[in-house]
Image (cartoon, rainbow, N blue to C red):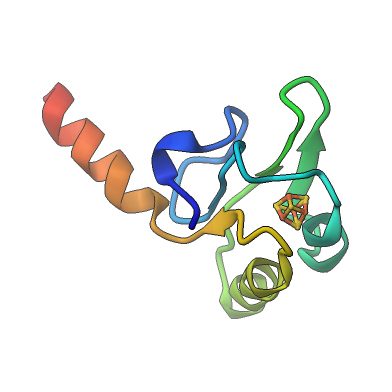
Length: 89
Ligand code: SF4
């Protein structure tokens, strides 16, 4: 199960993220995610390049999420960011 505390460093802030400890860089998300995913070769993980801003983007990201063989893509990233912001305020 993806853990939002283990998000890829280059992941765009927001709901969707790649758990860098689960990703095997198979690139399925890059081919299915229509530009929303890329590989960070230095960190050795995929990451979400930008959060989807419409229905079709959301569908592409969810499709990639369901296709990830490692279940490394999560959609609860926003919750952790909210908690972090509250603690830092
Ligand atoms: S599909 Fe999953 S395991 Fe493959 S590169 Fe994307 S996030 Fe990593």
